[in-house]
Length: 442
Image (cartoon, rainbow, N blue to C red; front, side):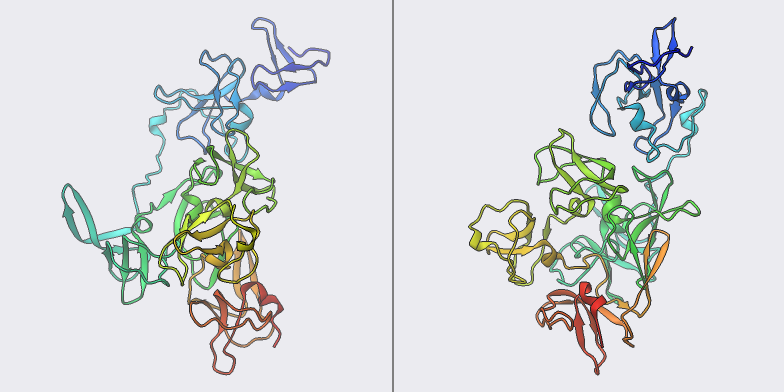
């Protein structure tokens, strides 16, 4: 029954406070929010692979919510997994958040075994042409892949081409990888074996593995970066959600060398990233400390490669998060500009080379080197297409990676180290930084 007076109380169904008129069950001595009366008994959420059920008097000890990683007071209502070998538990307000729950109730007589499981073992390798046995293991050494016209051969070891990019994740190529020498097409073995479909912890629909066209510059819905190569796109008609390879492979929790505690994935992130100090947007995702330290990583920083290569160093450079060196050493060895000691950087201890993270990776680390940017090329952000106009320049621009010959930018005059845009026509033959492109005047 509805009490006739306002009062402060703790809702027995959700465990949060209320200050209005609650509903009372005199038999059970329960006080409940009006909205909590209609809580569904059983639901499915994107953060767990079993049905979870509502209960308000569990006998187990208090545990951490597997969504927000704060303590669940099990004297009050929560959602838990009823599978005998699973101890998943979540706050009511976390489990019923629109980002993880589709608003549908699961019937009491629902047989979870009848649920069509998403088979993540099926990939886009359409045929194994040749395979070899190594002890008890069998490895496909030549394959056909749905996203390339020719057979791909496996390389286990050997020297890498510094310019080589995986056409799946756009990261520098490393062994083991599949390749087509005829087309200079490369795929890390793990990228070739990516499943056709995946689920995302904050998206309700299944995602399908796709390969982007180099004439379009998609933006990842999770980290907002432009990319080429493989991504997972929503199968649902009218939904524009897409996630690049780096973000889709992130798990609910993350151990990162920059912080001593475990981090957990959150959405609606609007705090400042502890690494780059950018303010997040309300719709962004990020990682926060499970111990509630004042530490947060946005997805751009959380997915920075832990090692990278520099043209003048024969060792990999390591992502470094603190700098206690002499202030006179706070300079980048590539651009020769000063470094902020609070910013992350890449460092080789053996050669004492230090680079800004942006200098080490470039402005466009996940776009295909050699692809052309036409006048009016499409930039896709979500369901919206934008045009890149270079004023009235008549020629396409090529995304290049300058290794030895680093020309000056036509706009700002600074050297175009690493990635830049270049017009290769003989009558032009100039370069421009990506961030200077809007100021180009001819």
